[in-house]
Image (cartoon, rainbow, N blue to C red; front, side, top):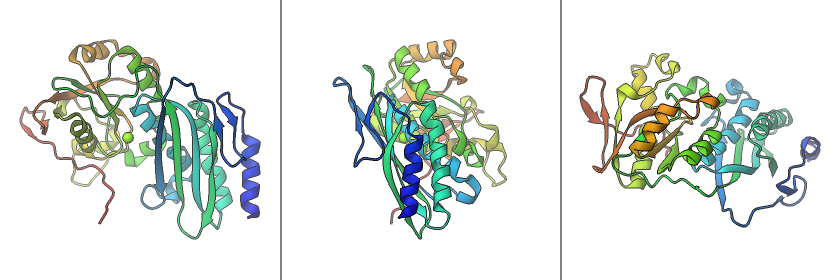
Length: 309
Ligand SMILES: [Mg+2]
């Protein structure tokens, strides 16, 4: 109990006033101001030691950073602006205080970078492994939210960066594409969007299912991270790029006219992000992969899925 109180005192000392936060950490709940013409976008994500990360390898600071980053990525996928977040943790009883501080310092880095104050949460300890759950609140401008549904046959599919091999480190250090999404919806009408968390093949299937369409992906156009070549597991770099997941790039559908102008203008270049076209949506409700030699084959979703028996 003492440990928890001391930790909360430490947290409150780090608190910085924010114009959207009327009541911050330390009360029974936080209170935010909210413009009456904006809707609230809510998302939550839980990371579990053993399943989502290995604490000894990743380090608590990077785990904290990732816990917030994955939520920011979901806000980005809706083209929502981050407003505030809350964090719940189940800490290991032994060494839990140090882990808690490191988690917080990792989250604080992104919290400042994306102006998303951590307004509260719940701190617990137990004999089990580390669990951290973040809930993030965002708001949409006049053009949001962008949904997974809305892609149309003939739309171009664009991607904000290369894929594959994220497990070798990128999944802990990626920059959520929040600014990129907000820039895109200001420039063009984004028909549908999703962030690549489970793998391109699986997330593209989600987008197509919601949009009631199919798609073809051209392997020769797909940008692949150099890390995707560093595996010796019998799977090609292309397969890693298609199925690995945790890339946290944005996949989105736009009209061919908007797609062509985005590719020509590369408006995200000031953010260090290059846009790639990887394929098109089709009315035929299947996923197809066109290989570099021109042959085509079904693109089977083989990304990550939590097991539920
Ligand atoms: Mg998502």
